[in-house]
Length: 228
Image (cartoon, rainbow, N blue to C red; front, side):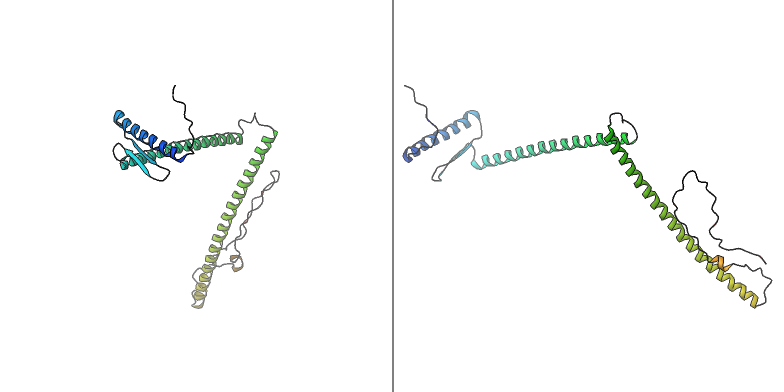
């Protein structure tokens, strides 16, 4: 009769368990040695008993086998990381490609193209986007105009101040000439009230197209020159 099939489970009897461990341990180490010799393989086997005793076999040295094992695991880990990184960037590229296509489609629709496939709700959303963009553009434009007007007013005030200083110098010179009896020299007359009027620019609201526009007159004259 042939040998019966052994059920692979823990042996309850401690003596039988120790005998089985010794037999199978020796068989395992023997098979490892045969595998290393027959196949020119680097083999390392470590077995710890239930009591903590170590039994090992190495075709070269156990340190060499362990170092080679660790290096192989590191290479596999790096390979898996590289593969995962490649898959990650592939997903990122696909997502960016889809976003680019969506932006290009939205741009065409904002320019008035490819509107045939849109429904009422989509057209309303598109109209709201255009109105919002137009308001933003108008706000930015008005702000730029206001900044330019403020800059012009600032320059106008500087010129006005310089004009006052020049007027004072002319007045002092005229007074000195009159005091010394040098009235033959031409004297420049300035209207002080008009010279003190600054120029103020303001941004006005746009008028309806049906109104007629008149050419604006000058806000103030800086001075009139008279030769005596």
